[in-house]
Image 1 (cartoon, rainbow, N blue to C red):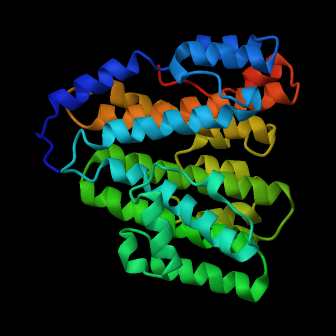
Image 2 (tube, rainbow, N blue to C red):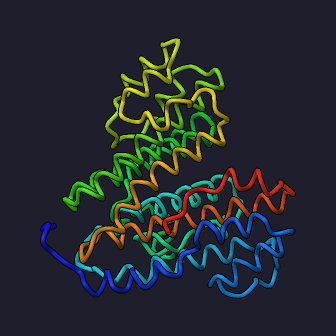
Length: 325
């Protein structure tokens, strides 16, 4: 993609949508709400539609519709570019996981399918049922077969997630490289690195062996698996990881609560995403808006889930991520 290619209409549309994103103050208002019902009211008054028929326990329907509307409204803004697809492949791979687990378990997983990937859900379902993986565009058919074979041998559903997560990051990384957009490539690299750092910390804290981490390691990042192996053997793994350029999130990774650590990882990614707001006429603001909206919905999900489990407001606020606006 040429560095000089501009999209005035697309950016104008996104700038308008940015004004409707939920601010950090509004998220804090939801956290302070006396009940889940009141928090949901704040959300609907912020543009998320009407309260669902099932009430507060159906809040996920609001989030699903909101995110689907975002994907649909932005997909046509720069149709000649595959830039937005980079961020939709994760939904395709999520849907493949659901279809595999549904077939293996016999339990209907329809409610977990996301209508926000590069492949329409109905077409994906048909292609999967007929095993026509070549019809599934960027989905790695070999990885799908490998995941199902791994489950058949081990009866461990964990391998379905591990194998397809690796395939997803590989797909995202290759697609990002094809866009030749530094911002998009930079985000995918950082996302892969942060994903691996989170996995490393989780495995290390659980006292598991390095093999478990190696199985879960995803491609596309800048930190090699050898660095993680060195950190695993070190008496001070945080110091080893802090030398990778991710000191901001690794310094206290072994001592902070895991909830706090995950928040710091997400906030680190958001600090990168926010750079898109300062670009004009290029595709970066479109990407930034998508990622900002996904983070907004993640924050809403955290708040609503906590409210339904009677977690106090201060604890909820500690878990809420930085907002895009």
